[in-house]
Length: 196
Image 1 (cartoon, rainbow, N blue to C red):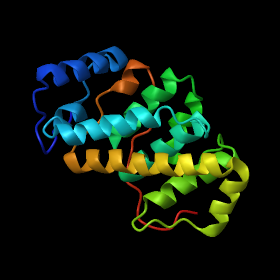
Image 2 (image 1 turned 90 degrees about the vertical axis):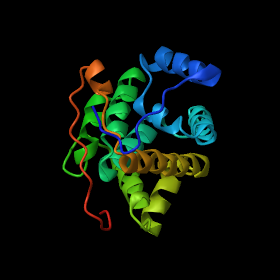
Image 3 (image 1 turned 90 degrees about the horizontal axis):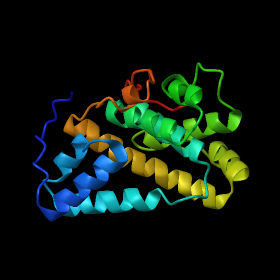
Image 4 (image 1 turned 30 degrees about the horizontal axis):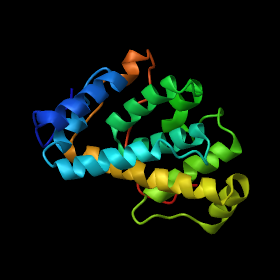
């Protein structure tokens, strides 16, 4: 269990009951970040709205987006996001061997060239400042097309929002992957630098 820097608020009232019911229905519990964001309901509402809307984006392959999100989480050291990413990969019937390998994708042999480009792109966008190069962008545009690349880029930006917020708040894994009997590799922040 994590020891967040901002204690979770009690999720109360009609709005609190609604988000609690939906969370329990989808996840089996109310996730810790919800209680922290409940301190500012306008921020929480915006957070939930964009999250819900992004779930309907369908121009880019779900597996590619999932691996990209987990790459961001691994690079930033967001154990909550990585844990939840494995849980979602399991529930969406994605390739769990690949999902499990995301934190060590450079050494792994399970990824295709396109998947490796997506993982590299996610890491390049996550650096501060972002360091996406022309060759990588051109390869992804050629392989995915403009609509999917726009979607992938937006998803990676959202993953950075989620992961950076969780790391700043001190939110850690809640054991979602354990419920799926996945044993993910640990998230560890990467050293800053240009991804290869």
